[in-house]
Amino acid sequence: MKFTKIALAAAVTLVAAQAQAATVYLAGASATQANYRSALVSLCSGTATTIISTADTNKSAVKCSVDFTGLPGVNAVAISVNGGSFTAVTTSVGNASETFVNVADNSGNTLTAPRQSEGGFLDIDAAAFPASEYATFGITSAPATQPAAFSQVFGVAVSPELYTALQTAQGLPASCGIDSLTAACQPSITKAQYTAIVSDAFNTAKQDVNAILGVGAAGDKLTVCRRVSTSGTQASSNQYFLNAFIGGDGAAAGALIPADAANYASANSGLTSYDVQEGSGTGNTRACLSTVGTATEPFYALGVLSLENYPDLTTRTPVRADRKFRYVKINGVAAYDGNEATPGKSTASAKAGKYDFWFTSQKFASTANGQAVVDAIDAKLGTVDLNGLFGNGLSAAKRNSNTSPVTFE
Image (cartoon, rainbow, N blue to C red):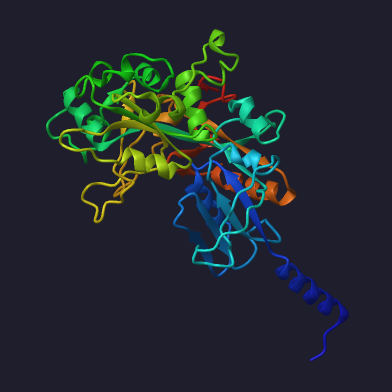
C-alpha cells in the first residue's frame, strides 16, 4: 500500500497529537466536585470514560479514551479539592503544591508527586479570603477571578439527633421523623440563631443549647462542623452569616469573626457546652454532622454544606457513614427538596428568589490548558440544573456580584 506525503504527514500529526495528550490538574472548590466530573463525562465522546476515585474523597479524576470535545490535546483531568476553593489560587500561582490522582492507574491507588495545579473553581471571589492567608503562600494580594456561568446553593445541615429534637421542639406533626425530609417536616433555624452560634463572640449559644435552639438542656454540647479557612464553602458561610466579605474592613463595616477550632475546640477552650471541629474537605463536614451520640450525651451539631450533598434515608442498606445528616430551613424557607431515593434539584426556591444562601461560582486559571478546561466545564454547567447548582441563565433571581443582594432583572 502506498501513502502520499500528505497522508503520511497527517498520520504523523495524528500520532503526535495522541502521544501528546495531556492531563490537566485542577484544584479548588469541593462543593461542586461531583458536578465538575459530570461535566467532564459529558465532554467525552470516546468509547470509554473512566472516573477514578480514591479513598480520599477530596481527590478524583476523569479520563477519556480520546481528547475531550473542544479540548485538543487534553484527555484527562485530575481534581484535588483538598483545602477547598483557596487552593485554586495558592497551588497555581502561589508556592503551595498538591498531590493528584495518577491517571495512569485506574485503581486510584497511586498519586502524583506534589505539584502545582493549573487553576480551578472557587465558591466565591478570591477577595473573600483573608489577605494574611495569601501572604502565607507568597501571594501579595487576591487575584481577580472570573464569574462562572453557574451558581451554587448552600444549606445548613444538622446531626440526626438535632434534627429530630428540633422537629419535636417546634411542634411538627408526630408523623414527621428522621426520614421525613419534605419541606413540611423540616424544622427551621433563623439566620440570627446560626450567626450567634458560629460567630467568635462568647454568648449564650456557647453555653446553653436550649436557650438558643430550644432543645436539650443547658450544658449539653453544641458542635459546629465547619471547614478550614481556605474553604470556599466556609468563606460563603462567613459572607452570608457574618458579613465577612462585604464587611471586610472590620467590625465598623459589620463584619463578624467566625468561631474556629483554634479558639473553640473543646480541647482549646475548656468548654464542655460548645465545640468547633474543622475539616479540609466537604466529606469531613459530612462525617462530622453524621456522628451519633449516646443516650446520656446526644450529639447536637450543625454546619454548612453545598446542596449537591444528599443524605441517606435510614432504610438504605447500608447507610453511608457520612450521610446521616439532615437539612433544616433558614428563616422558615427550605432549599433542600429531595432525598437520596428520589432526588430533587434543591434549586427551585433559590431561583425563585425565596432563598438567598447561594453565590455565583468563580473560575481561575494559570495556564492556557487550565483556562480551556475550566471554560469548558463552565460552559456545560451554565446550561444545566443539577443538585444544588443552577445555570445563571435559568434563574429569574440574579446577583450582579457576590456582594450584591438577590434581585430580579
